[in-house]
Length: 267
Image 1: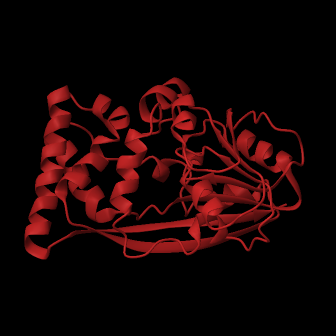
Image 2: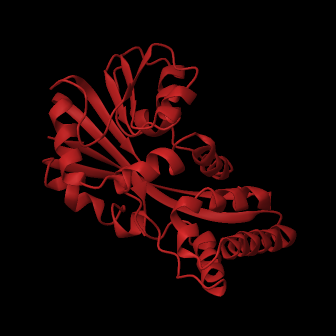
């Protein structure tokens, strides 16, 4: 199941930061985080680079970069005004409402362009990658993060089983059918001459089943329509929460392994 419908993404999935924050909260229990953040942890920076974050969401990547002393210009770009207006605490960051397939930026304006866990939502990624390359200066770097097709299997399996038990289809993750860690490099290599991948594996040790339920609930725009009734989706949430509660009762936490990575691309 892909969610590349622009209106749905803008109003339902990312109209406000609530759903994204629910997903970020689950991974806040990871046993380690990206060293120096996803941007500075993926490429060595001088500190004065102009950075453009496409599909920036609530701006956490740029917020971390600025908090760690980055002096260069920051541009937070998202097609959701709800996301952009929710951003706080990023000093000197210019917020821009725009689409990845038609960036409202001039050629050769950025040293670093980021597309973090968002390319699988883009209907025409080939166009978006041309746009990303267009705004890069010579010697610039494009960063694109995504999940492995084996990500979070401890949660995906009971979630999928719950959907089938409630009369729906098996779970198909967004990134699996589109831009995954295993498949994304081939697409990127059509636009960039050098593509490296920086893998990262972490385990979220979640102590509260309500956090797991909220994570699954945050995907309702994708998966609720696949269920036979609204009540069936509630059954899925109940079953996932019950599964997590059982693991927590036995082990103290519900452990979920995230396999992801960042592609580091140069022209």
